[in-house]
Amino acid sequence: MRNRLVLAGSRVLLVGIGGLGCPAALALARAGVGTIGIADDDIVETSNLHRQILFRDEDVGKLKVEAAASALLRLGLPDLRIERHLTRMLPHNAVELASRYDVIVEGSDNFPTKFLAADASRIAKKPIVHAAAVRWHGTALAVGPNGGPCYRCLFEDLPLGSAPSCADAGVVGPMVGVVAAVQADLALSVLHGDDVFGTLFTFDGKALASRRRVLPRRRGCPLCSDPRTIERIDPNRYAARHV
Amino acid sequence: MDTIVRIPAALRSLTAGADEVKAAGETIADVIEDLEKKHPGLRDRLLDEKGVRRFINIYVGEEDVRFTGGLKTEVKAGDQISIVPAIAGG
Image (cartoon, rainbow over all chains, first blue to last red):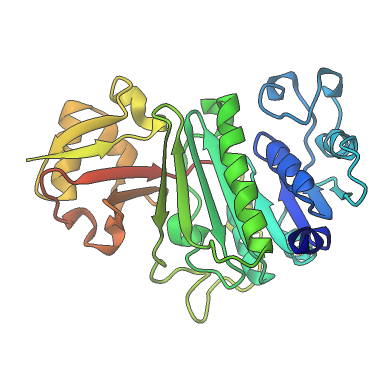
């Protein structure tokens, strides 16, 4: 009961409401999170439906934020509040968005947004749970409000080119369910005050094998060094290579 | 002396779908060269002119090779080497 009371007063921001965001939102709402913010400017497409489980055929063409909010409110959870942000997380709004929530749940489909969310959460001193899934490979990582080990400890900076994204590599529908469940579990653990930070979870959907790996801090990490070298959001750091 | 290299899904097109392959060598650099001989194209996916690509992490057991000597990290027979690429998608 105490846990539900804690969750009822908690605020979670979903960065992206796609294959990961949809099942994560369901898990968080059902667990009793009081306020779920959703930041996304995309519309529902037919190709999304096999894995973005909040959306129905009749949602195709609608804004994901609106379709997701409607689906979550249909759950009939009396204390659930949805905050719609009809925008991506962008350099000009990232820190302000992050600062309004207790935990950031990042399941975006592009690297600029992943690094931006990592940087903004660190600047706003908010914990963040990153996740990604491409083909049969998925990862999840929770980072504490004071950083390290963080996403930039794991992957220093934006890839220049050949890292695969879901648009060109594809995503296996059930994979995002597995990874999003872990992501939601990590977010709930953070809200409960558990130290789940700095351990990379990987899941191989072909071998049905999962692994947890404690990450080291990267020496010279721009978010975790003291003093850190990223103290504010510089749009050029993300826009130059935005895909 | 063979190590066991776990291949992430994104790179299995280069290993005929195998999720685990064997490669020999005394260092990570040797292992990658052996991988390249057996599975051409893998080296370029893992390395650039500066070393391990920045969106690729290579682990020997639980240790990230960036912190244990990079490409000069020594390996021994039976070591489990994992490749963890940065991915964005969902």
